[in-house]
Image 1 (cartoon, one colour):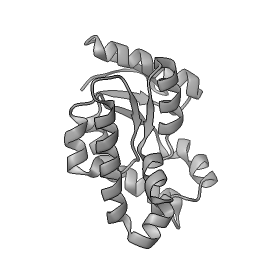
Image 2 (image 1 turned 90 degrees about the horizontal axis):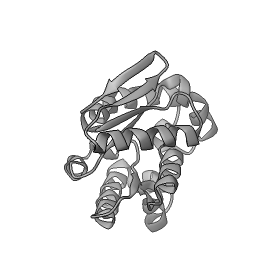
Image 3 (image 1 turned 45 degrees about the horizontal axis):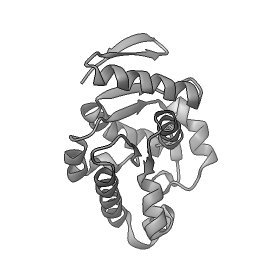
Length: 179
């Protein structure tokens, strides 16, 4: 949540000359705002719509290169996890300090109503092990421009496709990332 999935994904798709699909945008286009879905139908209904959007995006991209941005909680669905086995999954690694300003600017996140950063930390603690387990490539997004991060990600994906673990720059140094 608020790590730059849409911005970095859009930039990466542009660099690759590939389509960009954002499952949150797909849900909103077909069902209205996420906040309205949460308010009127609840989180469970949203998660069902989200899982269908992910399945549709993966199906639409079948057999070609595409960049798909999933909402932060999409990977909690077991069906979505199974679909992601057929994809190269990127985890954009971040921390609370990095996302705090972004979250403060965007109060339209239903799961962060109230004490946004405390809620983010709780959600992240639950989701992080899933992100790490599913990830084929990890990119630290704590620093760098969207363009720089997308270039780093493109390099990491090329290395992954070639079977070479990608060194990823982090604030603490470089680490080898491999699934």
